[in-house]
Length: 281
Image (cartoon, rainbow, N blue to C red; front, side):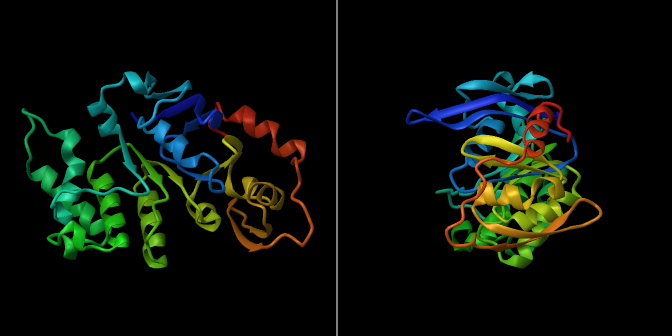
């Protein structure tokens, strides 16, 4: 089950919609980056897509079945989630934290075995944490812990990985390495990212959130336009677009006294909204 479809997702808090009518389909095997300014609803949307929060309207379907009606063990086998902050009060080693990713695969008839041990070893190696395997969790830095959370998700061997700001606490070497790693695994990946250039470099498609709404969806070079960046992120941008649809962005403050456009040209609006239900642009 690696097909995840959301229709009309809405969640409210304090009398306002944090996420407002978002429809989105993850295409199997793609890397979809979710971007937007702070407070745009990215983390709340991710929580609903992962089944951690229930929408007040709309629904999420996993492999055609409603996510909230799917047994949690089946969801855990299909979807791995790496949150921004995840802590534990237990006295665990790095290896034991990663081994938690195997929990959905274990049971009375399928106890821990060589396959589970191999999955944990491979996941630790993939994030360059084998040498820390026997270290206590609480002795590790924030970046090392983040790499372990990603290793736990890899050990889970899901079809879909949902990452909420996965490069938080990581130095630039490991930021690039982790994003390259999850892309190379050919899993279906949804990652909320702050760095638009990381999104442009690794994502097959980019979804842009603004004030709770999904305002654009498409290939990096189609979505990350100077107009869209000015409107949503309130900065000016110079964009170099590559032949393969990728792009590189240079940011600058908006000129003093200028205002971002209140509305983009029509070609940047309706086609994106229509195609959200089909997963293509």
